[in-house]
Length: 364
Image 1 (tube, rainbow, N blue to C red):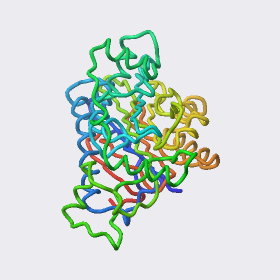
Image 2: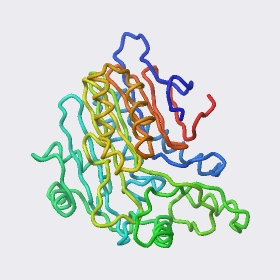
Image 3: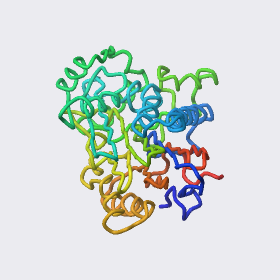
Image 4: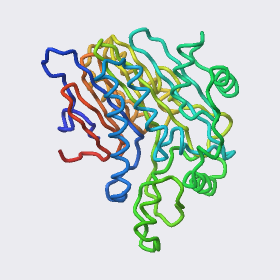
């Protein structure tokens, strides 16, 4: 498959030759079976708007001289607060009809990292992951222990009603009907056109994307991994990565995916690159995707794009894994390959160019 890369004109970005030190940021909001033919104009507009808002929030931090950690935190929080994505508000539901959140953040300068998994009631999980990194001696906290730490750190606990949307509730019902024992792998794509028998009016259709309207009158094509993430380069040459997710619809037994696993779904090292992944987490864990990309850059001397393609477009495909990544290095090069049909993604390059895309092979 083609990737978001130089060789298909979807661009690997190289920093402009300027007197100022480069800054750059890239984000993703999930990958999967995302087709233009199956998405309403209203939904597409809303997705692009939130992706742009997240990019600009992170880039504003960088333009003002802020660090890459603050930039990725700001970008991810925008997406955690949107019901369009499987992170924070609007996260998918477990088999017990609860929301369990995972998140990770890593600083490329120091290799410090903080992650949380299976956490309930935290509005912005990425901030709790960062607090673990900065205010504990640990890297990962899980479940009730992480929630206890959050309380000690002054995090307010949000009620379940804040996170749960009707859309996700119906996805859970559908997942249980489809398979009584096996979790629905990724979170299904919500942004699809109504069926021919749809009786909803245009105004009601557009209201679907506020996260509260019913889905049972909509056709659903394909599946989507709605994990969100960001990578950034600041003026000091430091990079960082952050990832946040609700995991898999109908997940059971305290399942944890790749997002909070350092080296699998999240990784950052100034010497190589920053990576945030979205996909079927079990495959990303087994393939140690994020670190594998960094290792290919470090040990084989591959370019960022070559390394990202080798892992996402070849290794993962051969092993049956679906999804994509965003990656960035200290020179401002950006790669965003994905082996699925689409990926919500965007970047602001070192020359200030804004790119926001959803589908494969979008026309420039």
